[in-house]
Amino acid sequence: MTIEEALRRAALDAREARLLLAAASGFSEASVMAYPERSLTEETEARFRGYVERRSQGEPVAYILGRKEFYGLELSVNPAVLIPRPETELLVDLALQREFSSVADLGTGSGAIALALKHNHPQARVVAVEASAAALVVAKRNAARFNLDIDFLHGRWLAPLAGERFDLIVSNPPYVAEGDPHLADLSFEPAAALVAGPDGLAAIREIVAAAPSHLVPGGWLLLEHGIGQDLTVSALLRQAGLEEVATWPDLAGIPRATGGRVK
Image (cartoon, rainbow, N blue to C red; front, top):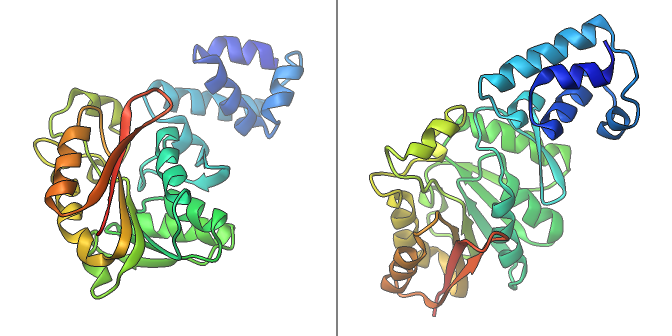
């Protein structure tokens, strides 16, 4: 079977099919595109069929490949961690626009935000907190791969940071409401990293309540949130005494991140 025949029979999105065939064959994606007449070995065909079957069952491509690019870093991922999304890069952009020598990433998952911040601001102290021990294994592996010195702590949100204060706290917490119909499309990803109570704001409320006491004067709290949550999150930040509260849109124009500053 040739590359062209394999891709045609896959009945998948063209880009996804090319990525999976490249992984199955060891060819680059560019090579898959450039040489459609190339024959595949039986072993490659079998591996590709397995990948296609997994994808047809709804498994995300990132889990099949075991990797996902985020802010220029190719991270290892597996079902213990949420797959990093492009919209979360906004949180990194906003953080890097601020002056900081210390930052805490709450609910680090694969380590995506923490690694991106440390990679782009190597002088800063970066602390990454995660409640899932399995996720911490993935995050630590990613940090070791890029030789990034990050302090990883096991625990829930700000609980492991007793007595510590930071210039910046960032978080992409779970913000999907229980029973949200979109969860059906996210069944392969860890529910604990997605769902946060009846309205999706339980984790954000917990973080906002505790964050001011862990920020230095002038320190920033930056949070990712879901569609339609920006006004509520802004109100929570103001109620917690934060100032200069603002919301920023992602590339699709959707209000995606909200932050505020301690007096």
